[in-house]
Image (cartoon, rainbow, N blue to C red):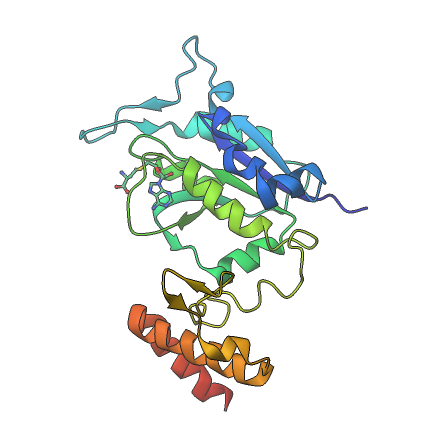
Length: 238
Ligand code: SAH
């Protein structure tokens, strides 16, 4: 039996985990041992009396920086023999997280994720431990923990056996460079609003065409960048 997907999270706030990852889809998968969560307190790797993890920046400036020696010791202690898992650092300077990256991560044996705090981490530990910097968007959080939770939530739902119906996931936003079409459920009329007739037609080909057109319309309106890429890929496919 191969080991289940194992996420090791390095943080100074271990009590933030599993948090949302302990609920719903991800939480059930955790219980079923489809994936494992190994949370490590970076502070445990500090050897001084006060368990210091940060220090003042060389060159001056505001805030504190996470110490390379302590962080490296925490990473080293968390690695398994022949650990082939990608090592990530949550960082606003990182590669933007996309569904494509999420799919790549879901194929790995697991992930080692470092959550930054303060102004960030000493540059040398990023180089020395080969940390791949990943950003969840162009905004600044106060720490890497919520970012790690977002990333893991997206990855875990793609692990085999996590999502109920296998097809759910295929027609979702981003899987085809298009945003998803609008959804409707009962009641059929609500506050005077009806649902599109085509959804009641029972004509599945017609419904598919309608959904595709809606997805294209929404993407064109809201995400011209995605729409341009979708147009380009469509031309390539032809
Ligand atoms: N001084 C830094 C911000 C530090 S925020 C800068 O200007 O770039 C503190 C920590 O929060 C970071 O080390 C990182 O781990 C996390 N973080 C903040 N924003 C993030 C984002 N958009 N994506 C991923 N991690 C983020």
